Length: 312
Image (cartoon, rainbow, N blue to C red):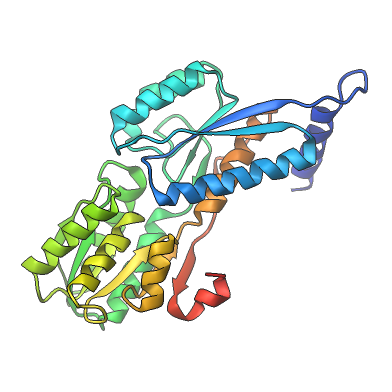
């Protein structure tokens, strides 16, 4: 840690003072590419811009956050945005992958161009060893599933909302949810939905599941849109308090559903922190510094009882 601090101080000084001792400022442009247009990624960008402002204040440099979001959660669209961004020769790209295999070739070409790449809220494609900012997705899902099992007293019919099935983080959470439910003989997984990280789709899918399984006892989700859509469907059906919902992340709509008692709780991935660390890692790479293999932002457990304590 001491060596890292010394290196960071050296980088700051070197960035401000030229070889003749004359101060000068630099401009950096970092591109943020999410899975899709989504409120969760608005929080990521909020954190990225806050970190950029802090670095500007400390260094005198100009740091531009170039946010480019696909209109739909499709790998082809995301790859096109990545390719278009690379052509502009940014100082770094942070991306949340829709499909690690489907994105890999494009990412390899960007890295070969000498453009730093970091991954947030996802997994680095096999063999690329890119810095990853996020948390333990399996643990996050396990926390949610175990809480649902506890709420149901170890017995009941449950459903999983998958999100985007090809997205690494959504897939990992889905498998972790299933693994938890498989441990409990009294828990029966009766339905699954796919919302493609869209709130309206999640609401429609959850409503259909409730109609098909009126004796459903609980839901978990694999994405940030899922619990909001599920909560809205449960509320619309007049089943709040009857159907238990345990969510993910900290979007405002979800916080309100927790406050109302429609959703029991959530395990949050701290999106603002992911955006902040994405910018910090790209900035360090732009200075020629090595970055860690992984940065774990931790998991925040949100309940109705601790909303005020957490500042919601």
